Image (cartoon, rainbow, N blue to C red; front, side, top):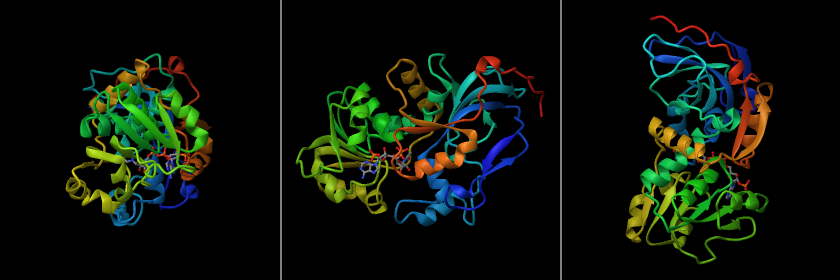
Length: 340
Ligand SMILES: NC(=O)c1ccc[n+]([C@@H]2O[C@H](COP(=O)([O-])OP(=O)(O)OC[C@H]3O[C@@H](n4cnc5c(N)ncnc54)[C@H](OP(=O)(O)O)[C@@H]3O)[C@@H](O)[C@H]2O)c1
């Protein structure tokens, strides 16, 4: 199969299109022919080893000390089951699926294997392969932080910094779905798009200072890392929460204590990649409550250009890479593999 591989950290030029053997599913795994994937912030961090200040060594521990441990990037995909292992009963060849390898990567390739009970779910018929591929990374992060970790409530006011990114645009939609009142922070060129997905107010960070406005919110969410606690605390009401999806290490580590001393709470950490969260956001997407924002789509041959666009730090929602031009209906289901 064709895949993009890298052996050293760096710019998009470290990526190489290579021919490697297709993976073979174990008895409990499925083999998926990938239709579409994305270049996510996770791919950008793992490829370039760009980490929040103070977490550089942690990045090497996670992604590989001397060089990348996982040679094929790609955190999310949509595709069609090509073959299933002997013990698999919940999928069959021909099923259209959405997968979230997340931190295990591997989706920048024509095929991937996934545990049948892993972070995989059926693709609803009313969602295209392109949109489906863009659901897992941003939406599961937003859902886990807003619903599970920060427990955003109906009627609460929320300020979302970085609202036009993959995570931010999903945060806006999930917050709206929960019945919260969303003020979004992004550049002016994205204001209309962000209003369309649910923000009642948009602040252009290039012309306005959200802190100087003097408004307090029940919850302030930073998805960019440009709202340090020293400033953000003024926008969090007493008893309110600061949610750090991206932020400075100095805020993340002692943050809980700093916030409590001010009678506020800090919520941070790493988003869970559990299958149930993937299922929850795919259900919302099927119901039309959540639609991943698509910036642009690239052909598989243009993977480096897709990475270069993500490297600008100003993508709008999600950047898609079409891996296979074939439609699910045209994929020939192959054999149910015997026991390995
Ligand atoms: N904690 C976790 O477990 C977890 C999980 C997933 C992701 N993350 C982190 O979350 C962050 C966001 O991920 P993502 O996928 O949403 O990234 P992304 O899509 O690349 O975010 C890009 C967005 O950031 C906005 N932006 C850039 N500078 C800004 C500024 N100064 N103020 C406000 N907005 C600004 C841009 O908006 P404009 O173009 O309008 O300027 C752009 O739309 C990444 O750092 C990622 O590593 C953390």
